[in-house]
Image: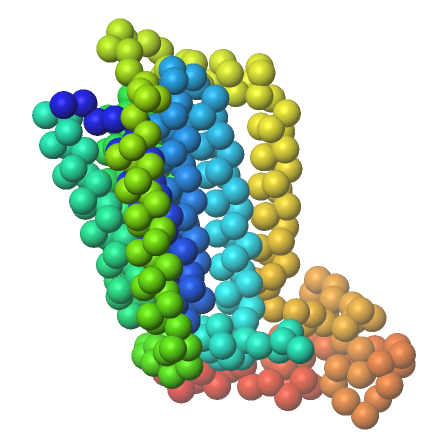
Length: 101
Length: 221
């Protein structure tokens, strides 16, 4: 039995949901960052699955762009994390609440 | 056979993804996330996208996760995550909503089967380096260029964020050989606009004027 398109979409949905759950329940800012990477990868799986089943290379090109955005996000995000840690000596997002009204 | 491979890699990916969320140590989460990336790369190979699979391993598991692990080890925070005491009453509501969501997805997966996409078994060049490159540099050249600008902005932003802020005031001058420091750096009582220069010839003298004992660590050893 060949894997159907819906299988890949279901797997992508599961991974995305796990990523959302991690972003919501995690307190450590680096762990939240890794859960965002997990969500990006779930979307990538959807792109590649559609590109493969529709025989269109466009989906795989968008995977490249998503990967680039992820790399840029990693660079800037980790810079922000280092800046927060240098100022507040913690990685807990509940402590970085200086912008909260 | 392919279904068995799909189940294997999908199970590996879901298990590692759950481990990412479940682990309290960020380093263990990072290692589990590498497992997710590897299993997704295997699924990309099954989907006839070998180039994407290679890029997934090289860029994600190779570059991005090394950066994350580097930051984790650089900061070296061993604090245990605090247990959350608030929002406990939302747990039953979350379970209920999740059950509704799973029911919806299961309904769609079971009932909607008219839309069947049959994968063509004929070998095609979809997913090879040639087809991706030819499309990327002709039809999708504008997104490619925008992506390069995005990367440039990310480089500048990361450098701006991660470096320590201004070490020297704006009116300080550093010349090779001799150090000329403004008096406001040496004596905080002096106004910053005062451009009186203190000339020092050696690093030791500059450090002594600034009140920094930079030789202490070397002498102690």
